[in-house]
Length: 632
Ligand code: GAL
Image (cartoon, rainbow, N blue to C red; front, top):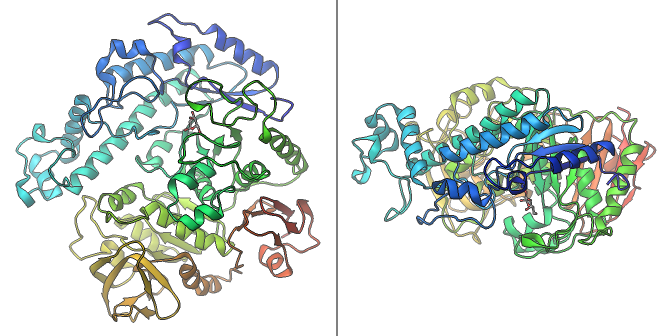
């Protein structure tokens, strides 16, 4: 590991059956030896709590700790994440093992940080419909609404005679004849998100108590919105995430052309988007805990990356502010579920293809040791609202390829193709100082958010569905965008959704798909749909974008705004992306063509051809990168 340049090693996250093979039979010496060995070799350790994989005896002891799926089926032992977040007995087992591990290893000199559990929600494990979950949900409803009539009113239960007379009448929103009340579904999501947060916090508190001063992290996933990550992050010191660019492309991007183009590089924005999202989760400290080092095993197909991609992905993470990039996994496992998953080593121990790239990155890091790699506020921000995303998912037309998160990625791509760095922030974040703030997923627009938006100098872009629901999932009494009307005087009177291949061609080359809103306002729109309805409304510093415009059309919308803020926009080729960190300017080429940095790009990036080129050359091949030292 030292030879390749590894400095941080995560261990233990699935090791419960070896740490405690029988109830109370603690076998910690092997872990002690492993940690001592790593420490002797100056490798820092991240220790995972083993709660994502309870051994067989734990569930023999507590058979009702298993999750139940939406069809009433138990999710059994034999893989991982076989627990229900609401199981009280399982929480006690987790408390116990976490306390024992924290007490034994919390002061180990090699310990750098903790990781709670592993990937909350992986394999669709947030929602459970067990008896204990239902009981906890009823309690949650009681605490939130106080009075059953208040709940009936909030959810609109008079519709279809769904009114309850007691909190004990409430079931989970599954197995209904047709769709359950979306307010009910949303409440169950909120409840489940709270369960994840409290499950995590139990461990964080124990770790803080017995291992003071050691930061606690959790490894989040990509394209995953089944709980509120901002909420969970409030209890963490470091947000980390697991970056599998080719796996995400095959699994989460629906456009077939994109899949072909980026087959071996990954989508040029999807990973960067998550870097910016997780940086925003703690407002600073974040890592990549698992970086794909070759083909993975879990996507519909698993291509090998282009030869230099592991280096590019590593540098991309550092360029976005990562403190650590760790690779999954060290050695390819010759047994069990992940035999087809590459590691840095082959199953028998020789180096796999990515090892040389990791060594190279390590040498290059040393070359940049004199640089100042701080994180500045970006010129643009996207406000990420997990509850709002869930609201859009609850009532999404079935034909839509674009989950609201994917449309957020389209907005992100538009900003990034103009050469802008972007912060992805929580609704509670300080929004002052941004030239552009995009409200993409705030389906409920709170007054505190609109007050904040009214107070900033930057331009505000409101995207479709902003403020289209109250916090309890009904249409606001003043019509959408609800409180957003304090930013721009208009009302959405009708929504028009169409099959995913349908396109609205607007009269100035702009194109929209899937979703548009018919707006009534005194404001004259910028352009019109063929049937006469307006598109794009502007009032002072606010623009309401009342249709899902594609990325190129969004660039048209952005250009005058950028000019107003004296931001020089570059028009970067499809697969070229830039990112500034401190006094270093990075450029990455995802292809499909090689890229030569010309004077215009240099100007826009604030570097001159003679500025010190730290890494790479002016000709940047596909899967290549360059980095300059900025002098401004
Ligand atoms: C992650 C997980 C790892 C491993 C990896 C495979 O979801 O945290 O344990 O399964 O994916 O890509």
